[in-house]
Amino acid sequence: MLLKDASELMEQKSVRATFRISPEFIEALSILSGRLGLKQKSLFDYLLEDSDSLIAIARSNPRENLEKKSRIQKTFVISKKSLSSLENLLSEVEASRDDLVEYAIQRLLPILLKERNQQKSRETVLSEIAQHFEHSIELLRKIEKSVGKDDPLYEYYSAIIEVYRDAFDKMENLVQQGKRISKLRMEKFELE
Image 1 (cartoon, rainbow, N blue to C red):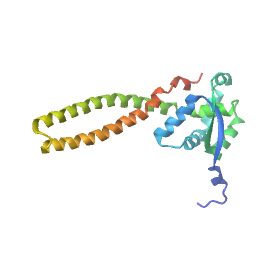
Image 2 (image 1 turned 90 degrees about the vertical axis):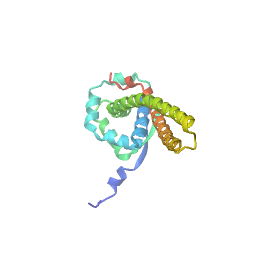
Image 3 (image 1 turned 30 degrees about the vertical axis):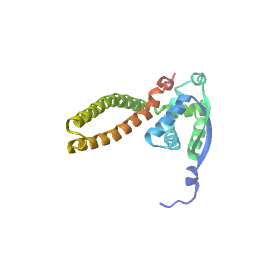
């Protein structure tokens, strides 16, 4: 299908928008965009698409609850279409633009919880893998003492350990990167 004018393309144009939102919400966006391999702009576009959900959340939460939260100013790059959708929603609810952004980010809570549980599982499994890796290295030392470094058996097992070490380093790195989600205070995402 051919485009008749450029307005549809112009809606995808990036703009900078500044919001005052809770630090935890900023951190959640950063964590999830990194974990999911998405740009924050794409996350915003997705979150602001479902205006019906945002309206329902905004209507069910009194403004006075949100005004008590400490917020910081943060500039995001979002699409012109998302910013326009956000502005249109303001006419339908008694909420500030910042409130609506927090409501939108709050919709990520189920994904955050799932990722956090996955991180805890990874940490548990990694400690078991670390023990197994140590045992594998001990076995390599025993093989060296028994048959020597020049023996093919030692060389084969040593090659396995090198591959294991490389994979283990990658697993450790993955778990280390996930530590941010473990530190995220999830109670900040609860609606009051």
